[in-house]
Image 1 (cartoon, rainbow, N blue to C red):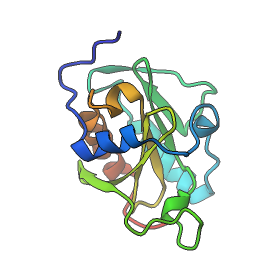
Image 2 (cartoon, rainbow, N blue to C red):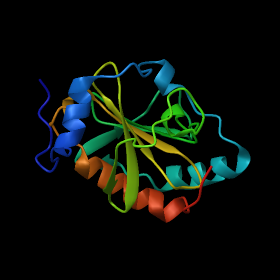
Image 3 (cartoon, one colour):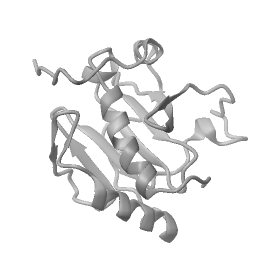
Image 4 (cartoon, rainbow, N blue to C red):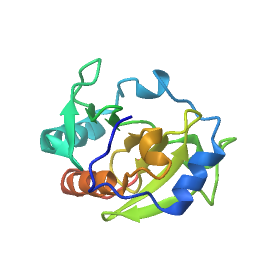
Length: 167
């Protein structure tokens, strides 16, 4: 069993409850496809990629497959970042999954929308930005094993490179 760096703190209790509740959301390979953002969003994502650190919360950066300037990962099991993803259905007014009360937490100056996955990981999306940024925390973090530091450290890079806005 992997021992996580001490710096990692548990997600808020509500996130752990969300993870335990599960979800019918997509996960696995389909959720990790390389995003294909429009030109302006792609420019913001490239700026973010250039600012991403070698370590996040003590986890070493790896190389996601396929290699892309819109994806990054740290640790094993991997924390995965994807930039330029589409707006989630739960936040799309008029969609079957729209949830006006969707759970979100303010961490590191970013409002993060939390979406539990069927594999017990949690997909977080940075909202109110000119490009959607997704960070998927594996179940080892989502179930109370850490994650707040990961989101806070990445939030600093997101606020530096992706302006506030709506897409």
